[in-house]
Length: 197
Image (cartoon, rainbow, N blue to C red; front, side):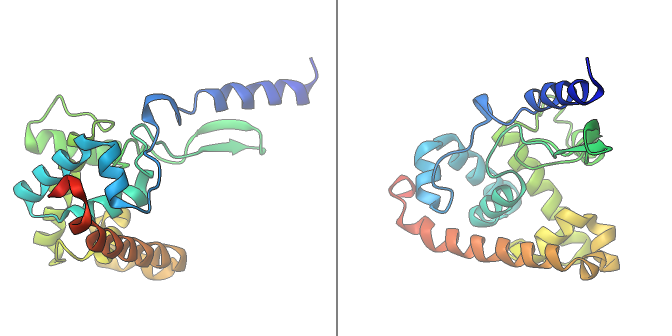
């Protein structure tokens, strides 16, 4: 078997293990909060539970999950490749709806005692986000309704946010602005959802 063909077989095998579809599929029409909640009633229960427990508004949770995973329960970061073809692992350990990293997830499990929590479960993933965002509010003074800065701290980590690491990442500043815009769009849509009446 030629070297090129062997490399292609490895790439195809790695791609087939990517875990993007199946039961982890996203709802349709992600620009419509009402449509999302109609398709996935369990999401609304999870979002409301976090809003009651932590005070993080539903629209901020939804916009953050959209940005992190597009509502795909088993989302993972892409593979990195050596020489353009040989997979050498994923870009990070981020996984699930919330794209929580292994270390931060372990910290959440330890602090909350919620040892059975799973990152591909909407209730657990949103609870993690609420826990993290409250810590961000307490440590950095960022309001729970400030989707832009909560997202920056979520992406960069609190220490990175404090250092202003995002200032050298113009793409991330744009993403955070889009996350804030989406949160506002969802905020305006939610009162019109029949499921919320």
